[in-house]
Image (tube, rainbow, N blue to C red):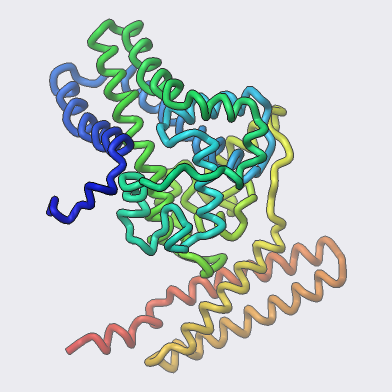
Length: 372
């Protein structure tokens, strides 16, 4: 097995940190819990540090710096830069540079840094373990290089990260309960939290391009997954994000779990962020309409489709076309109430079509064909 590993291509610095922290999380943390137990301070410290560092990545590194989805007060920028460093996912400048390349060249084997077509392992962590390419020229983040706080964090990111990720929890643990508590804080609030948060972030690059639905576009591999949204603070609605990357929301539907969106909205209400970028509802609906129509056409052209399934899909297509035509007329009319009514009717037709695409009858012929 080890003979197949290209050791000459391993990035030993990054690999040592990722593997070392994982090893400590799997050995030292259970040993500490076995000998000293777990108290409410350790649990609270883990959750608080996870939230501070996690939101610094999703709100700060991702939606603020990478996509410029809103503008933030200097105090918010400083906070996310300090706690973002403690996530040990590189500086905001490098993170945004690589992420913008990912969006520009998504699914391109040569230019997408964490291309899913190279495999789930590569997209999740392999691109870091074997990352021997020279640093990027940062030509796509010239705007961020003008920010003195971003430049400061980029120069000192490892020292900031070590101090906040491991030093701060250890000091708080010592103040809470002495050296034993300091060790627990280092292991649980520091090491274990770093490992868990990193792999939650890595899931966006891997599983969010592998599992889930594509309700807005099938032009790239990005997918929406409510399960991934739960572990990534709302970043799991990745198909929407790749279609409308500058929207400050990932979970665009009111019922979708996106705490990062809610936090940005709250900060806007208290005046700490402003100029939130939001895609108009009409544009979102059109994207859903075009994609569901494409998927319906694919299903209708599928060999072996039963007559009942084909009839149901044609009925759904007709309803969808009728709703789209009515909405187009409403848009030309210019009446706000009529426009909203037409948009609601279109959304309902899209929802019906989405359910029809999951209709078990559609897969019945395939199941029958598979039987001996």
